[in-house]
Amino acid sequence: MVFLSLNRIFAPMKLLICSPAFYVFLLIVAAWLCRHRKRWKWTFAALALFFALFFSLEPIYEIAAKKWSEGYPWFVPKGKTYQYGIVLGGFSYWDWERNRPEFGGNADRLTEGIQLYHKGIIRKLVIASDGSIIQREDPAKQSGNPQAMTDYLVRLGIPRQDIILETKATTTHENAVYIKQLLKDPPQPSLLREGSQTCQMSTAELDSLPKQGGQGWVSPLLITTSTHMRRALMAFQQEGITADPYVTDCIVKVKGKEGYWLPSLHVIRDWQSLIHEFIGFAYYKTHPNPPCLGREKPLPQPLPRREGSRQVFCGRTAEKHPIVSPS
Image (cartoon, rainbow, N blue to C red; front, side, top):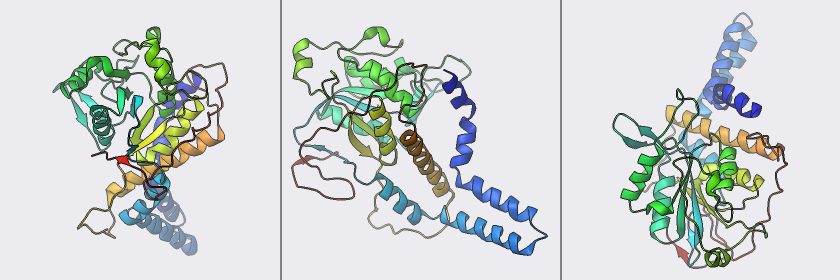
């Protein structure tokens, strides 16, 4: 729990560390401090200008983002189904004034999850700690409305019994920890927070589902933004859950739209998110058993991925096989 407290205290500092604008500002300050030393002043000023241009040009960001997210599928092979589709949060907040969810740039996570459910590819839709459903112990903190969000999903055609809400986590790693509790085989209602839902499956249904490494885990489909997938998979693997990836928000070349080599502030914000993924992945890589939620036992080693038919990946092609289009 101490780790969680420190994590929340230093959250604003993490935002600064991930922001290119912060480093440009530091270089400008350094140039001002060295204003009486011409050589250093112009060196720092030139570096500030270079980084400001580098991190504000969209084509450069797209190259980096594509390279980072390369290799993860944006579809499901024909005929393959999953008991659970886990949609990682970060796509909406709850608007208490208008009593509805307000969606942001990651809304594809949810819309793709809903499509996959209606196509019969996933049987249960798991929403992982989105801003529209999150519950905090501190009433002054951001909180969502799980019951109203459930009603919203029901109006979109998802049966109430097929909706599972994880309402507690504030980080991707915490998502994995709490979802591991929610999706334990068989489901454990005693571990659910108020407002979360699940449904019991028969023994025959459980026996018919694919298992992971003999641990009694049903293989889930993990649905999140392409640039977030690499870190998300590692967080779930550290909890012993080997999920199959399904990416959304891929970097695409829009027909008729050329890349503009002009500085843009929104690109700097995009870089901030991407740098956060770099740092988070490096942290998980160097801390295979990160302290979390007051856990005393060490985490299980990541399970090996199941062998199976090869897939066609976003960014490169392997063997051909029938696929189910996401649209």
